[in-house]
Amino acid sequence: MTIRLAIDRKVYAARAGAPERVLFENLSLELGDGEVCAIVGPSGIGKSSLLQIIAGLDGDFVGSITSVPQPVGYLFQTPRLLPWRTARQNLELVMFDRPERAGEWLEKVGLSGSEDVYPQRLSLGMARRVALARALAVEPKLLLLDEPFSSLDEETLRGMQDLVATHIARLRSTTLLVTHHWYEAAALAHRVITLDGSPARIVDDRRLQQARAAE
Amino acid sequence: MRAADVGGRGAWQGIASVLLLLCLWQIGAGWAESRLFPGPLTVLRSLTQEAAAGPLLYHLGITLARVGISFVIAMVIGTALGITLGRLAWLDRWLSPWLIILLNVPALVVIILTYVWLGLVETALLVAVALNKIPNVAVTLREGARALERDYAEVAQIYRFGPWTTLREVIIPQLAPYFLAAARNGLALIWKIVLVVELLGRSNGVGFQLQSYFQLFDVPRVMAYAAAFVLCVLLIELLAFTPLEHRAGQWRR
Image (tube, rainbow over all chains, first blue to last red; front, side, top):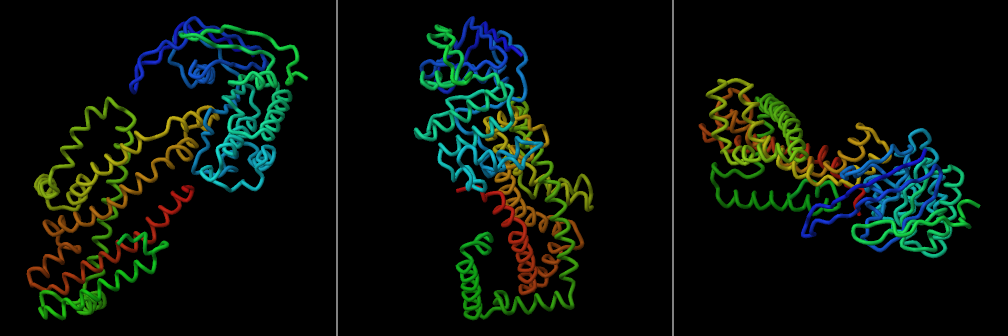
């Protein structure tokens, strides 16, 4: 299922001291089925907002979007684990029909032994790995990853990249990956979109020949 | 002293402080040597006499039933109202002044007016008590509903929790501390109001008995009834609120 997004105008109203801001104007994006696309660009340009719009969490824009494939796996910029549920329970909640596999997923992200730990007791990097497991465990048709590998050490980062690459290849999930780093984009994506300017626009849209995920 | 401390880590300090209070009370009573200021032992004697041969259990039961029913009514209506106002800003703008007015109308005025309008009947008592408490519950739960994290609601939306799971897993855990605060304050306020309402217009219950013994200047029995009631409330704290609070907060660091 191809996702077609056309934003005529997206405005952030003046709020909490920040002035009104036109975030996007005449921005259109088409994502093919199973395509893995990275979005790069400077901080505050609107990368995360674009994910929110595609996820259907922000419908406050002028424009249109086709329906997105379900289920969606979304790794938010912050882990957003339910703090009153343990790591395992956070996974079980999204794995309706196979909650017994929550433990396997924690093992895959290197967190076996932390099943019964509440998120407040996890480091940021660990919590993000639980959140990544949650996003992948739903076997998403659309995977949205907002800076998935921040707060991770080099070795864990490689492991998580491999895990994501393996799963998106197996599930053929249409994937949007927000990152600040070109090497991350190159490691996973078939295509890299660069956003810049104010209002943000696509200044570069290139397909990568040697995409690791397609190997 | 908070009852939570009795059951929790500060157990021995809590018990010691109560014993100290009783000792000071006994010493003060011995020093005063007045039948208007009986010591704890005298009060305990009156309490056992009233419980064994007197009507204490009957009146205590009636009052506890009234407290229980009013408490449930006030919590249900107050919670529903508070959450609605917390989520619907336009309605809150309309009803907020009403809440402020209700919060500031003296409890006694509400009691008198409900007795005048509804008569000296059981329903009037329940309405009077609930009306006194609903605004407090609503204001507390309104704050809780305003503080609901959008982030978690979005998680529920993305992972398609559905309304029931969202309520159970996302909304209730966030509202629980507010609900518990409202319930604990609610119980303390409600039983005090119930006694006044009984004193003014009922022919049974602890409030009625207190008035009778007040007219006889029987201070030990007045204190015995008060002590029996405080003990009941303390038990509710220990058996209901403390475990609930512990359960709701176990995930906190």
